[in-house]
Amino acid sequence: MPVKTGRLHRDPRRVSLTAAGLCLLLFWSFPAGAKAELPPGLLQLKPRPAPALRLANMDGKVTDLRELRGHWVMVHFWASWCGPCRREMPTIQSMADKLVPDTLRLVLVNTAERDDDVFAFLGAVAPNLDSLMDRDGSVTARWQPRGLPSTYLVDPQGRERYLALGGRHWDSKAYLEFLSHLPK
Image 1 (cartoon, one colour):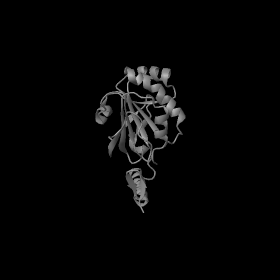
Image 2 (cartoon, rainbow, N blue to C red; image 1 turned 90 degrees about the vertical axis):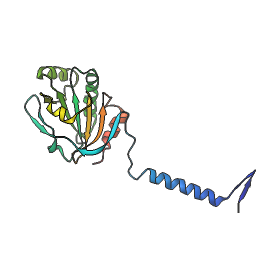
Image 3 (tube, rainbow, N blue to C red; image 1 turned 60 degrees about the vertical axis):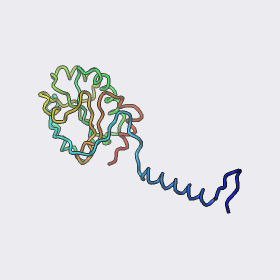
């Protein structure tokens, strides 16, 4: 029976149905296992195969992106002359130190610089990081970043899934939480 409350008449059955409808709407809006929001500046991409990437570091050790399948990979394009890259690199070092080792594979790609410049820069700001050397810029051209720094997150199937353009604080709580909860 409707309850009279001033000028409005409320039917308890309608209130219950409305509450149930709201719960269903929320349930369907947030599927089970939904992850937290994307950190600021991280763009979700329509999954597409990542371009080929096979480069050596300064010591000649070759890394091939295909061999990293089965893991999330952060592919980070940078240069020591780039101001935002210079400010961002220490946060990447800090992020790498804080993440569980198998959470994410880190692939730094230096774009067309001399070994001496890269060695001096990394030694000063991120001594535990290693970079692949894209000496002629051909791999960078294949990936087509819209500037430096640009960071791609590649899923375990080898598909580009997220993109960050410009520098950011990779060691901030929002990024660390996001990266540590990427689906396996």
